[in-house]
Length: 310
Image 1 (cartoon, rainbow, N blue to C red):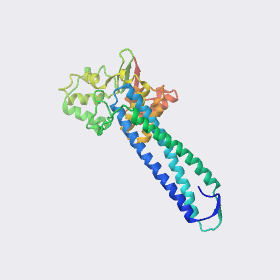
Image 2: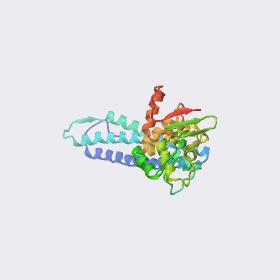
Image 3: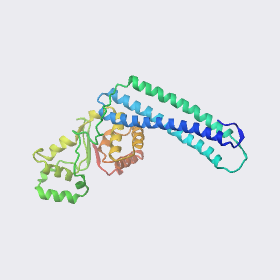
Image 4: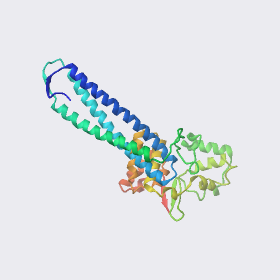
């Protein structure tokens, strides 16, 4: 702090700036550490097989984000205090300055920093003592899809234009109409009775996959059964499933990391949102459209794919 009134003394202000810079460096280091933990734990979500681990990971993630947000605000306030003092040093007048407002902000900020630091170190201590989830040193990349539930196509660009698909189909062979009679184009089919869901697909997509992999599949229906049909048991923990599916979709859509965490946390609490619908969306834009329709109670306006419950 600085005396409430004094004529500008560069040594006093420079010493104050030095103290602020030291605190700023400390807060930035804590922020950097927390960001690393955020990334590790969010990746660890995809390695967790035990529901207890799921709950622990989300609890840790929320605690880390709370601490991260607090430290981020502290950094901004320290920078504001620094700018105030730096502007005084740049001033050419010899007038006296009142530092009552500066000292008040300083005291409140450093009291908050002290509380936030206690929260940070207490959390880190509890994480080290009680966290049972083990993160391997070289974690694999976060998968966009689970291997047994969706298809990852190496040449995704061919599906962006139906003409490309038609050309490739013509180069291979003819598919009887009977193959497509019972298939539902761009439809999410949720069976409560069978506890399964069939994710949306395009008929052209299936035809191409079938023509290029006849040695693997006897029919297009077999592709639907093996690659697009998933068990609803995977979504029993609806809140966690919403978090996981949102996080996965946002990563696929290349949403910034912190924005991804915020969105996943927001939808974690959206009890009106079926996590299977998040899985069915191709990108975050489709999910945004669905959420808008859901909020405005106009789901009939959602045209990205059909949703049928049976």
